[in-house]
Length: 198
Image 1: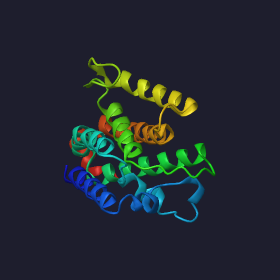
Image 2 (image 1 turned 60 degrees about the vertical axis):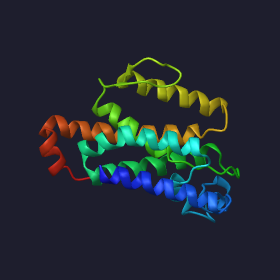
Image 3 (image 1 turned 90 degrees about the vertical axis):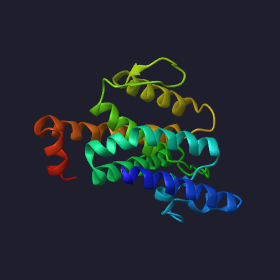
Image 4 (image 1 turned 30 degrees about the horizontal axis):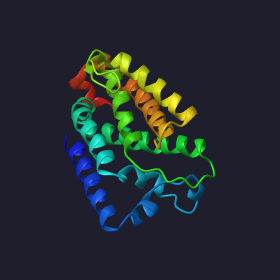
């Protein structure tokens, strides 16, 4: 729980620092495939940078509602590992998709899609309301819709959205969620949290 709060606070602080810098921090901390070797740190720092208040708000709201229960289920260490691996792998897929292009990618979406993917595997019967489907649907269905929408967006590049980063993070979340779920079934949730090393 506390890790989720810390991530939300950190993302918010960096957003206001970007505003104060008049956008200069976006180019320093944002991830550009063309400048990967010159700015290797950006593969990590970019997941804490947001380009607009709406971008920040949607990501942090999603992190709040899904991150807190997921962190309670799998523990702080596994949660933070999932978050960072999802964000980094999302950026790697973005790098491959836009290899050599100087398009700066920012946002925690890849990491948050990782959270959603793991949550969907662990709690597939829970319901979620998602755009453009404005009625509750089970997460077991939602995860396939997320994959399909992001694949479609990645192939046809609809709008200024990093679909590749979303998809990369989601795949990491699904993969780790399956590992977590096997442990839950084997040990039960309390023993699992105390015994599972990742």
